[in-house]
Image 1 (cartoon, helix red, strand yellow):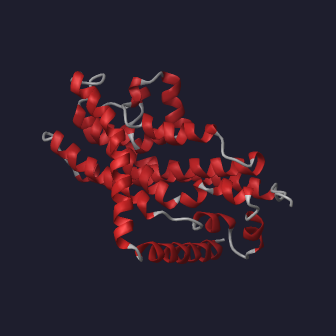
Image 2: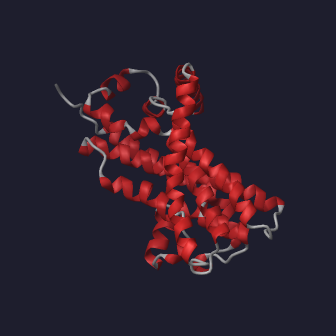
Length: 272
């Protein structure tokens, strides 16, 4: 099992390496592409700025605190978007009948699909997240940093990346039965990304539970921000739970992989 994992990891590294070198051949075009994508995704943040232009707080959350939420969201979802581009385009692979060739190769199907596409322009969203971190730091001059709070940041990014990848994988798995991804996938991915830009407590209790205990994006974004900002958790959750985020994300990703394997076993080809 472990040998198969490292074999697939080496294959993924080679596939991504080839695509990075190919895209880097046209550096001016690549930089323009990344810059354009950065500007486009940055426009999403303007909605927050417009809100705080009229109102001082959002249920007690100030602009700097909400900016921290947006930074955690953009960085994690940007990493998942960059790494998981191959998963995101899986419906095209199914429609064209190319998955039959994937099954014939003596390596894992997940590694092949994950490494099928890698778009460096998606790094623009990660860059936005880093820029928002810097902005949040300037808007929160009184924030007291501790070693544990600093540790929470990379843990939050890792947690978000794994959970967003899991959501993409679940959407790809649906293609085994529906041929195309459905809007049901956009609700937890695109919708979840937008919702995590705002404090989770502004939503109803049931929706909070969904994004904490079903699609646990709240662990990587909201709980992490609450820990850094010394704010209380919803539902009386303990403060140490933020450090369990990566483990919860791995469990979610593991469940998504298990469902993916079920879909692979039930794949019957697209025919001629």
